[in-house]
Image 1 (tube, helix red, strand yellow):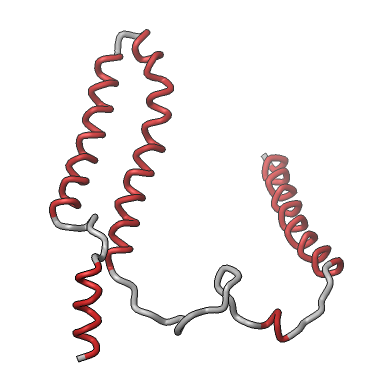
Image 2 (cartoon, rainbow, N blue to C red):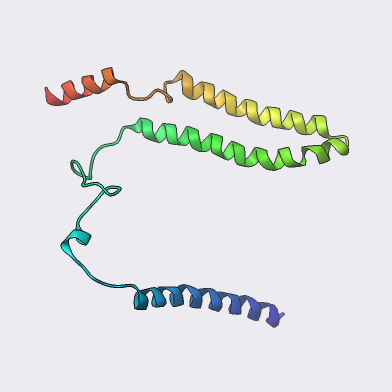
Length: 137
């Protein structure tokens, strides 16, 4: 039993040594030539426009959540789709297919809910002009 714990301990030590060893080798090998140009702030290779602390619209968050839901749906459906033939061979193909349909229908209901309450609507140009006029007035 102690041998099992020792094996886990060796793996942890090797992992920690690998991380710190990689950092140490990188520190020793990479060139260090600081300059004002390297220290400047940039956004994707471009000079930044405006302040960094801006208020984001909540719609970005809700659209990201809807995307995440359907992304997770795909992650759960792939393994089931891969073993559907096996379920079919064992006589449980109908049950597995109904479970898949139920899962997809729950997600469709969620999509309809998000669509109904406008969570999928992007900020239109009319709303931007309204927000700009309210903020400027």
